[in-house]
Length: 333
Image 1 (cartoon, one colour):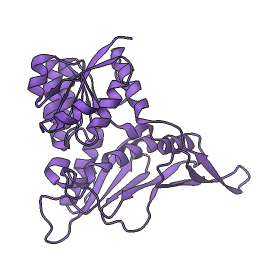
Image 2 (cartoon, one colour; image 1 turned 90 degrees about the vertical axis):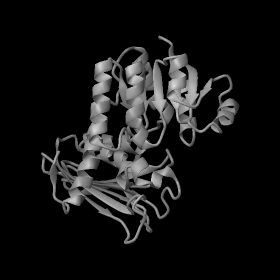
Image 3 (cartoon, helix red, strand yellow; image 1 turned 30 degrees about the horizontal axis):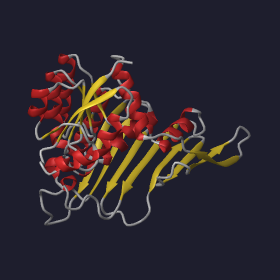
């Protein structure tokens, strides 16, 4: 397999995990890590000895053009950085969400296509153990025809005092886990999304620079099914990850991060009687995502997560925000 050179931009927070996963993903030689905070140099030297440290993309590119670059920066920086590295000749892996506007997402796709370089997005949750298990239940027909999907996540103290709680940098309450929930919904239903509507709530007198407290998205599909997504920093009771209704059954999954956990399926048998079954989660890791993606790039093959498919998620999120501004009106996608 062809050896690739790699670099990571942004090594604070989850960026360090990206460096390790890129390093361990088969034929990759790390040729640089980049962070605008010079204090991260000491972290890099300790955790990744021998890997050159740079304080700007320009300094890295003046030394070497890596085959693949991972972007683990605040969300609003993904688009300009991706375009810069694509033009320079690198494949790009962007943390999600790929952008905070649909216009930026499309500009990234066009830059990738013009440069002849791949752009993919770290939708690691496309291989979540619970997602894969639930998707298999749906595809095996245990729920019959799915007509309503409900997906939610929340807590009571999300991203306090970090850039993730600032609207400009993060995109808003919908743009973090919302991109995962959207991706889940679009792949559970496997029908064409038709309209999107949204609702956002922000407390009276709240700092306008901070994210909304709560957000919901509704996606209607051309097969008359619907997906309801909820993201909340004001969720004070336990919430179910999935509640999916079909003509033959219902699937319920609680929020559990243990790979040995199970989701519950209530399904109607051929004779009309109902049975309940536990379905084991699959066994996957984020490293699996990197291994598959780097293998594709080394083989000059389009990665599993295409730039255009990732941009579709951004389209849903931005339409939800626009819908809220229009009083919740459903907008065509």
